[in-house]
Length: 215
Image 1 (cartoon, one colour):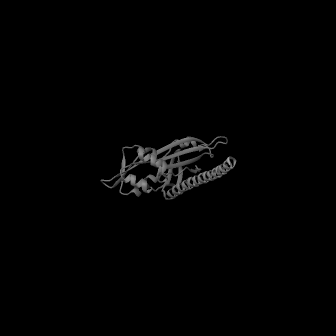
Image 2 (cartoon, rainbow, N blue to C red):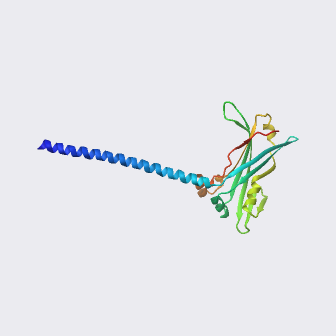
Image 3 (cartoon, helix red, strand yellow):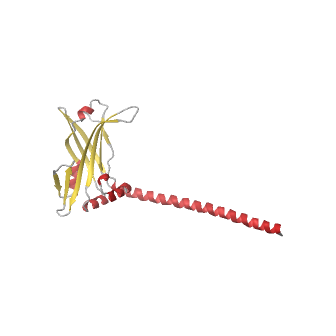
């Protein structure tokens, strides 16, 4: 009787253990599926937001050389996302930066930046007057514009910008020039800066535009 009872108990224990193991596998599998679905959903939202995000596009770049004087021309399109516009209209100033570099190719390491030049623009909105104010590189001179589009067009239209160091860098035909424009999220207030790191609608960056000047 004891032997039979032991066998019955052992059979029930084996059945329960198999069922528990199956339940654990099912639970783990369900958790993995839930985890994967969650991250796929997040990625889908991320790319959906990114697709609706605005940005900066470098349309044209040129370097002019006249009697040893080098100047830069460029046409850049700036289009702000809805969140950037909203922040601007609520009194948050936006800083846009422009970087230009003369690059020298190297066979072993990455290309070397021989010359670097930077410019910055600070754009703000005055709710009292409805004017957009723009100043360049911390200059005391402030320009006012009636519309946001006209202010952004001013930032994006570069004409006869002196780049005196280019003569030192563009000594050989192998050198090339790179240009990049972006919204500087580091200049935003700290709470907004954290959101700018996470959400793609704050990403306004042209990426590096590369061209070989014919001088």
